[in-house]
Each structure stands twice: as C-alpha cells, then as structure tokens.
Image (cartoon, rainbow, N blue to C red; front, side):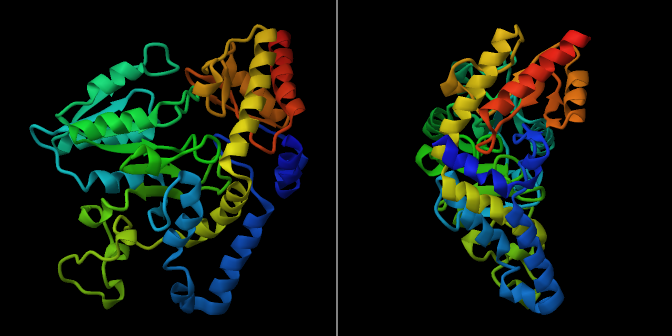
Length: 383
C-alpha cells in the first residue's frame, strides 16, 4: 500500500529538495494548486466582474463540498472561512449566555487562538470552564465528561491536541453533551486529512478546522461544519451579506436569513484561497483518510522506535490508537535543534512544552523518518 501512496510524491515539488516533516503546520503544496491559482487569475483577467456569478460567489460552499466527505458530513453542511477564530466567533454569536446555562467547557490543551476567543465570551456572560491536563499530553476523559452538566451551553474541544497529538474521544464528548442539552464545537484542525473524522456519526453540532495542514490546501481556508438540522434555527450576530436571502438586492432593512448552507457565512469570500485549497482536497479525497491513517501510524511508529533507541524523550501518546500524526522530540535546547534541522532542509517546527514536532504525511518515506531523528541525535551530540 505504501508504494501506491509514495507515487504521489511527484505531485509535491518541495519533496524534491527537502525532508518535509511539518504537515501538521503547513502541508506541502500540490502542483495542482498552482494550476488552480492560474485558473483564478485567468477568470479575474478574462471574465472580470462576471466571475462572481460564474462560481466565485458560491466558492465557499462549493469548495466545502469537496471537504464534506473527508469530514463524514453531507454536502451543503461545510463552508469556508478565512480562519478558525472567525468561524468560532460566528458560532458563539448564535448563543446567549445566562443562568442557568452559561457554561463553556474547554481544556487547557486547546490551541491558544481558540482559547482567546472563548475567554472573551465572559464579557457576554459566559462562564468558561477549563479542564486542566495533568501530564501535558492528554486530558483525563472522565474529568472532561464530568465537567459537562446541565449548566453547560457549549463544549469546545479539540479532536487531536496540537502539542501532543493526543486523540480525544469526540463521540463520547458529543454523547455526554447531548444528554444534558449542550452543543459541541469540535476542532478537527489537527485530524482532518490524517485521522478519520466522522462528524455526522459522532453527532457533533459544529466542527472547525482548516485546509492549511494535513489537507495540503494552504492558508486562508478554514472551514465550519454545521449540523444540517440545526442550521435553519441559527441567527448569528456576527454575520454579513452572504448570509442574506437576497444579497444582491442590497436591502438596508433588517437581516433576512437565506439558504441554510450560507447561514453561517459573513462577508465577501476569500476566493483565491478557495481555489488554492482544491487540489489538496481532491488528492486527500481520492486517497481516502483510512489509507492515510494506516500509513501515518507506520511512520510515527518508526519515529518513536528511532527516538527510543536514541534515548530521546517524546511528548506524544505511546498507544497508537491515542496518537495522531505527530511525534514531538522533547530534547534539550529543542528550539535551537529545530533551527539547525531546518537549516539542513529537514523541515520541522518547535512548540514550547512539546519540543521539535515531526509530522510525516502519506508522501513521506520510512528513511526520511529515520533521517530526522538521526540528524537530531547528531546535533545533540555535537552540543
């Protein structure tokens, strides 16, 4: 199976000149992304303003339709936004916080930008409940579930934690939330395209993430999944003309909500980013995340084997079923080690309280995994 996946390597130019091990931060650019951006430029140059009615206006939803099967979602339930902070803010603006249902349950292992947005909801009456990690790797599932009760309005957690690649049980969180009448916002940024996601089967109400990482779609393409039966009843305060029933009437009157597929959109869409994302989404969709996950487990297993043999400490779960696509090497002077690896065209990154994050994808080879660890060992030995 791995040979068929490695046949995709030729579609990613950067693999020809570097060991690319940072797909959890920025996925490698497919060759097709350049073609898509040229198509965008040609439409702008040749069709001008007519391009809006020839696909640009619908691009946030139509590109979302390429993503929907990857998330286990129906078409029309996923739309694109410029970033997760925007998408999350739109969701939060649909809700009011007051006694007795004023709680937002989250964890200290969420991505900081998400926590910044959540904490600002205290100004609107929300009570933000942070469940703390005890080991810096995972969050005790029982503590998380126990924090969700009849006073909880929203539960905002990550499927895969960005520091440690720990996989949280999204289905269990959704079941507990549903039992007490709370809604779930699941961040799948670190899982979509690498770890199977089934938002429909799990029963989550909203999911956010982006095409930047494992989906190889570039920046400016976050996404928002909304449970289809929930969408018609939502009235976000953070909105814009794409959500209006007749945006081109330019009616200055009260908001009139339109098609549920557009209900949680806002202003003018980021069209070039949508074009750029399509090539990666098509590749991931063609391969299938199940195959990518199988390959990912194999590659992260090699990283762990090499790290353990060298006596390096790692900050990720040992259990493959609990581990996403990243292995972080928690070594002395990790930031400097990362800098030197990058200077050698071994592309990784550094995060505080995690270490050097190494993230192979389906296009990575076994030997590349061994190379990055052995290079880190060599750098440490010289120091």
